[in-house]
Structure formats: C-alpha cells, structure tokens
Length: 239
Image 1 (tube, one colour):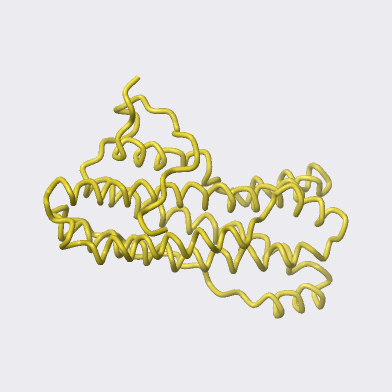
Image 2 (cartoon, rainbow, N blue to C red):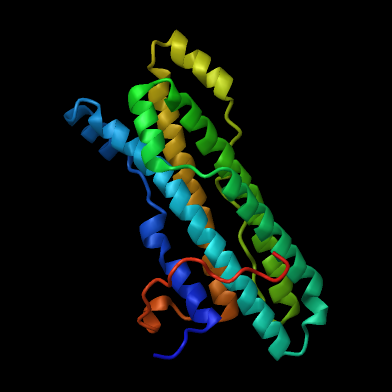
C-alpha cells in the first residue's frame, strides 16, 4: 500500500470530526435524564469531557498535516522563503496549543467519577470546559488566519470564515452563586450552555476546515476511500 500524502492525511483527519465532534441535542439530554432518574446526566458529563479531549487531539492533527501540506507546496513552487514567516507563526501557534493541552489533560472517566462522588465538582468541570474552549476558540482562529495568509501568497485563494458563535467568557463564581440561590435550578441552564458552546464551536471549526480544503483543492476523504490515520502526526518544524 502506498504511503498517504499530506493532502490525504489532512482530508482524513477532517473526516474524523464525524466521530470526535459530538453534538448534544438538548431535548434528548433532558428526556433521557428524566427517564433514567438523573443517571444519564452523569454519562453526559463523561461525553462533555470526552468530546473536548477528542476534538482537541483531532484539531492538533489537522494543524500539523496542514502545516506539512503548505510547507510541501511552498517548496514545490519555489516560494518557501516568501511564506517562511507565516509558516513559523503556524508552528508557534501549534506549539502553544499543544503545550496547553499537555498541561491541562482532562480525563473523562476521572472527572465523571469525581462528579459522582463530589457533586460540587460539576461546577469546576463547567469552569474548565468554558475556559479551555475559549482558549482554543482564540488560538485556532489565529492559526487559520495565518494559514489563510500563507495560502493566499502561494496562489490558493481562500477566505476563512469568522466565528459566528464565539464561546463567551462565563463567570464561574456568578454561576455558582446563582446555582445556590436557585436551589440548583440554574445548573440546568449552565449544563445547556456548556453543550451549546461546544456545538457552536464545532460548527465554526467545520466551516474553517471546509474553506481550507476547498482552497487547497483537496478532495473529500471518501474519494480516496480513506480510514482515519493513526494519531501522532509529525510536528511542524520548530515545534
């Protein structure tokens, strides 16, 4: 079997969003939570943390394969020097996100168990889900803005869309107080916000990825009959 090109690996990682970027349906969540007397809410905690973890791993892989794709094309066009600054910026942004993820590993099973044993932990889970997603909201946007710069200068016209649903900076302290004074009722809306924040983030990421793939002229993964590549993609130079 011939080795896959960076184009193909990039397309395959983009295709993995069908399994990593899980979208919550609020009606389904409420229905199952009621039917299971609250048990499903704990499973949802697991899924919230798991989708955060899986999404970030996939996005870091997308960024790595995109860097290698752009670097390879720049070299083949003899224009590597023209976009060296942009490629260096991509490496630095990728390194920042990778370092953040190493410092803030979120184990789904562990946090689900902690919430089962200590209900108050749910507030902290909501806290890091919001703050982590805001971090990636901003840095991923910076990454794709730099990718757009590099692609345009290489002759691949692309317009990466702005985020339509940026993750808001939610006040954990205020939300905890509201949860207490409403005897826990506010936590229902807080859980809803965490689910919808992730859903909106994933939709915006999808639009960015599709714009990049179209700009590069990369066919859909199904055209190659690809299966998702293994993890651990090569890092950009300088990372």
